[in-house]
Every structure is written in structure tokens, then in C-alpha cells.
Image 1 (cartoon, rainbow, N blue to C red):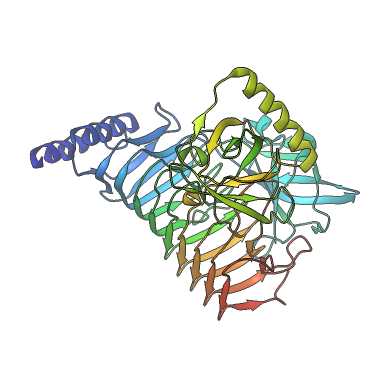
Image 2: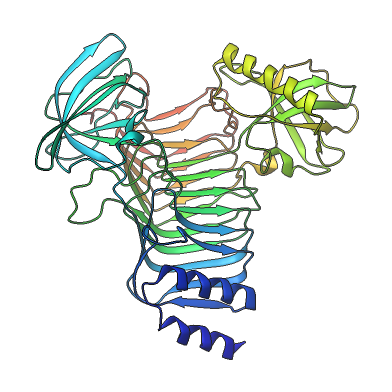
Length: 496
């Protein structure tokens, strides 16, 4: 084993800054059972070569270690991927960024509110990316021109009109109309960043167990910065730093959530980290809820999985509990049941087509996000349930990231905040600034899990809860189960 490791290290010295060779060597190290691989220092530009991702697949007890100053440059749809692996360590310093530029930005002028639309002109300061088509349907985020902090009440909406006019040289003018938040007031002269609606996670951890990552820095992601999805989870992230690149004029570091955890059995631990300058939430933990469709008999139901049919509900096995919630804004808890065996997949094309048609009507009636259904039969232990057709959302609590911990971290500047929609989540000794706040509210639109048993202790919140959409720095339902607020400091008057 030692000789194999030494040969990999020697091979590494020959391909510094060659992404394809790096991928071959990492794959060979994993397949041979090597305990670690050390990355030679250098810039690995995955945006100009194939592959566009650095993949660790099926690893067990394996460490990827930086041998010095290592930077990965990924295209908007590329990134670092860890799939179906156990006890993997990512040890920095490792820097991640995206190329070509995934945002465009400039100074806002002629901003006019016209009913539900906000129209403005943007004088660009950094030219315009060649793939400008992707900015139709994009997000707009606004910043104070002096402090470069995010402004509250930013737009998160769809472009109605979009025109580009060259002004000569590298200067451009963009005219945009956005469907605006009801309280949007953006002064002329503010800075604005447009973020496209395409791209992938900079780091994605899928169907894995006990990953640990330390000293990872990301300066740019054209989607989630970090997504952990499915599997046993229980991942640990230490000194994860997501921020603007020093010396750069770039306004955004992530166009979507910075840290997004969904459908893992045990939630993540994030410590000593900085997450910032995001187009959406800085930290979110939850799982997608299914939908109870039809009752077959006293103990069996057709249910829809809304999360893609791969993780979440399909991971349920005999003895797991199912929780049922009302299809309503408050998502009131209705009943609980216990699975008598694993979920049974339904592949009959007629039934699936009927389910998809019913789902589309449900989405229209209740204003739910669009999703493609995967149909399962849930067999429950007697005495079963007395719920009717299309009467409830379905949660598999064993796959909702229970036990997540955020500690000693600094989260700031975002269009969202922290969204805690799982059980036994702890946030301690953490500062949140320039954000909506910490929200523990059910979200019917996203059909995501309900908060319970949350501890917020010794946290500081500044410039949070400053809009009518999010009037409170800490938001929750009065009937939330097991919420503990201990010695948190909130500065409600510090709004800009």
C-alpha cells in the first residue's frame, strides 16, 4: 500500500496544473485503495479542458490533500463531486472559482417602480459575458455603492424585458424589468449584480457518509456553492470560506444558496466558517416532502416523491416513521405512521401519467413549485391512517438532516438568510449580518420539512429583519415544537 501511495505522489509531480491527469491519478488512487492522494500545487483550469469536474466516486477511507497553493477553476456547470463515498477527507488549502464570469454588474440609474415591475438601466463596469442569453430570467441583487454591503428588500424575480446596448469599448448599458418585491426601494447609484439562472454546485456531496472538509475557499459559484444531497450524511466542514476574491470588484460569491443540505440522514456540522455574498440563503437544511395521493386500503397509500425519486422518501425502510402535514400555509401536523416495509416503486405508465396530471393541478391550486412525480406505495403498520386522497404532505424524518450544528461562524450579505427546516438543529456563537434573518417557517411552495427542536444560543444578528417580507430577525411559528432561544443579541434598529 505504501509503495502504491509513493508512486502516486511521484506521478503527481509530473502533471502539475493538468486537470485531466489529476482526475486520472485521483481515480487510480481511489480504485487501488490508496489512503490518500496529495495534489501538487498549481492552478487546475477545468473550464478549458475535459473533464469539467473533479470526481471522487466510490471512495472509502480516502483523503484528498492539498500539497500547497492549489486552485480549481471550474466552468459554470462543473465542480468538485464526491459520490457514494464513505469517510472521505478534503484537506486544503484549496481555492475554487468559476470561469467564464458568471455574473455581470454595474451602477443602477433611472430606476422606476411601475406597479409590480421595477425598471432600471444598468451601466456595466465589467463588460458583458458572451453568453448573455443566460441572463434572461436572471436574479438582480443590489448593494450600497459606498459600503458594498447588500441592500435589504432585493429583487429575486424574472426578467420581463432585457436589452443590451454597446456604448463603446468595454462599456455596455442593460435595460431590465423585474417583477419586484412589494417593498422594493432601490436608490439610483446603487450597485447591481445580475446572476444567471444556470450552473451547478461548486462542490456536491451525493449519497455519502462522514465526509470532512477543511480549509476550502470558494470565490465564485454559479449555483449552490456546496450541496450535500442524500445518504447518511454526518459531514463536517471546518473553515469553509465563501467570499469575494480579495482585490476583485466582483459583488457576488454565490448566485444561489451557499450551503444547502437536503435529504441526508444526519445533518452537517459547520464550524469556524465564513459564508457570504449570496444570491439566496447562506445556510439551509431540510428535506423535500412527498404528497399523499390516493388511499388504497387501511394501511397502504400511493404517495408522490417530489425530490426526483432518488433520495429522500425512497430511502425509507421498514420501521421508519412517516409524518403527515396538512396541505396549507401552516402545514399543521396531522398524523404519524410507521412503514412496514420499504417503499414499493410504481412503474405502470398509466398510473404515473395520471399522477403527474393530478400533481400539475395541485401545483396550480396551492401555488406549489413544479416537480415531476415519482409514484410509490407506502405500506404502513396497522392500524394505518384515516386520511383521504390528496389530503397531506408526507415527511420521512429519518432523512431530514437531524442534528445539524453551526458554530463559531460568520454569515453575512445575502438575499436570504438561514433557513432551518429540520429537527435538532443547533446554531451557537455565530454572527449573521445583512440578511433576512434566521427563519424556521414552513414553506408550502417548496414542500420542505418543518422545524422542530431548534436551539439558538449566544448568536448575534445585525441588519436583519429589515423588510415587510421578513420583519423579524428570528422568525418562527408560535406552535413550533422544542424551540429554545438563549442569550441571542439582535440589533433591530440597524437597518439600511
